[in-house]
Image 1 (cartoon, helix red, strand yellow):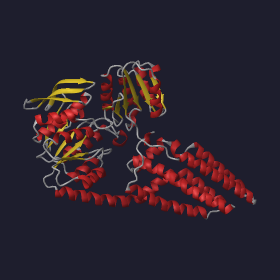
Image 2: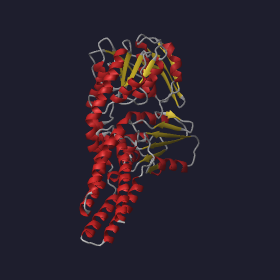
Image 3: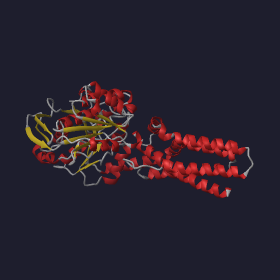
Image 4: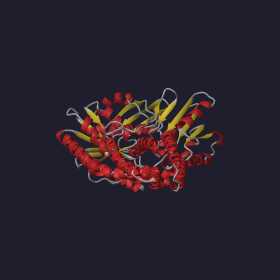
Length: 523
């Protein structure tokens, strides 16, 4: 009987270890496999790392073991094993993964991680199987308390292998680019707006060139490398490379691979301050793109952004653009809830009329940057009128849906938040804001969210704040600006917030702005 229970315990232990590691490797993947970011998640989510129920159950088993260790009766041991089995079954139910917004992707790296983990876990269980009752309990306590941190160990073990594989892929990407001798390479970066600008630039340049861009948000070093190796074809004439970063040196790392001849910096603002630590570091990092442009190239700079306008570039030609006033710019701007129109003005004085279905003044700003770069590469302005008219918003970025929702779920910066609120304000009827606020803003996070709450007070009629942890500064800002507290709802989750929406009485046309939807590692 005892041997049978031990076999059940072994099987359940294995299953529990599998379920738990899937949860934690998912968080590691969302953290970009960076130990620092994964540790930050552990620190910010103690209930997920070590729930109270697990602590109580471990203490129960531990206490029972001390009692049973001094008793010779067989039934004590059987009782202990039954309690252990009940504990494992309960833990399996609690730990079973819920539906994720961005599920774990079983990449080859994840499989390598899981194989290494299985080896470490097998050695651990082997040691557990040879232990006496008292030592066995210490193993239980260690495992159930520290299993989330075994991820650090396994990730560290695999790090040399992952670096070697990454270096091989980088060399292969460099080889592919070297074979494209006449390829035009354009780098795009910025604190925000870079993905939308990349898509818009692809569409307008396609009026003259066979253009390839990094897909979706493939803007990390290995994301860019993967895009080159899997999708860049000999027939492509232009390669538009989006470059993202969370730390100093990351843009330079991408530039050292792709060697851009031209560049565009969309914006600089307070984003990812947890990793950058200061705005000066953000400025330095974004301008790593400009530093990489050769003297016979050029970089398009958004001079509406004071951080960009005040930074000197001496190694290459600067092409400034603005919504109104400097370099390539716009006149006669007309903004509405159905789209925008404007006159594109070139430094030569030539003017061209454009219309777009995109929402918000910031969309015009992004389009002006694309038009400026395209004109510098010889694309006639008139050839871009039709492509601009057909431009569609990038999915989850100020995307107006048929049900009255404005989906801005991928926006994650204060300036973009304000721009989205301006768009919401332009709609008539009942206007509802649904947001968890902004994250990764370091010490400024609470203050910036409070400012955004105050700004939102004049842009919406109802505010649904998602997440009890993130809501307080937003609510504080709303109330300071005189917003009616009866029209603020703090939701436990996005689904809870959407359920609340359905209880509100309709007052004419309803527009709902879904502003930022935090990934699973922030919930």
